Image (cartoon, rainbow, N blue to C red; front, side, top):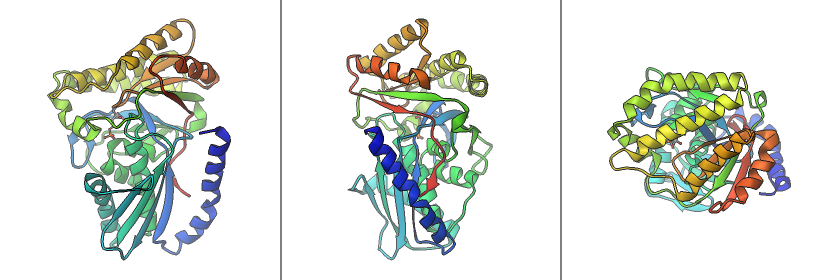
Length: 348
Ligand code: PMV
């Protein structure tokens, strides 16, 4: 999206804020929220409880500015919950997953109305750009506000987690850590540094905008079938410490090495699970080689990949233009999305 148009949309979203805040005290039945997707720097893969989405390990991410999901929830007397994503009506599993979050909200607010949910992304969904993270974070904020609840950041993070684990991390702003916790109450995410702390940029090399064959919910469920998952989990506290310290100390070289190691370890688990999951394509691997070559040549870059083929190339903001240009020249790269560090989910 051209920069001007994007800032106009964001300005329009934020100018609506005053109105909604005034309605808040009147217990609104409708609310709109926006939330950014996030890119995991230390990955979450595998649950110790699939229903509560309690993760097998802690994780760290950064929110992606400029990419967002905007969701409106309206509670009314319609007979069923309804869901529109990018103007398309959704039924079946997608709607059920949304209804399960609405049920939690209805229970907390002690209301019985059904809801109309309308959601739109400004980025391709289902291709490793964590659309479900932004979607469930925006849903948690909009639905709880529409139901007249005022939840804390921790409560919102916990609620969003029930829709998609990584959504817990799209609630707070900037650089975020999701602690695995001891149970449902304290498996929550919190900010470890504000967006302004470090000017990083994620240049997302889009290789495929298609929906992946195996979604992360199914992937988490089979993580334990890989003989490598236990070794991955045992080493995760060490990688979390290194990553956290690299972010706090703005040490790019250390960050680049640890995010590549962590991403490669997660994909090793994916590839060796039963059934095996192979998200990489030839162009994905080609970019790994390029990124390491560029770094050896003095360009501060590092790669990480979620459950898809797209490669997130993290760099210092002042090198983003150069990184974007180089990525666009590579075969198999259809587009490059460029995102700085984003803020917290919020009502608009
Ligand atoms: O939140 P989920 O269930 O979509 O899982 C996300 C899994 C990864 O994106 C691969 C890693 C992560 O930590 O975001």
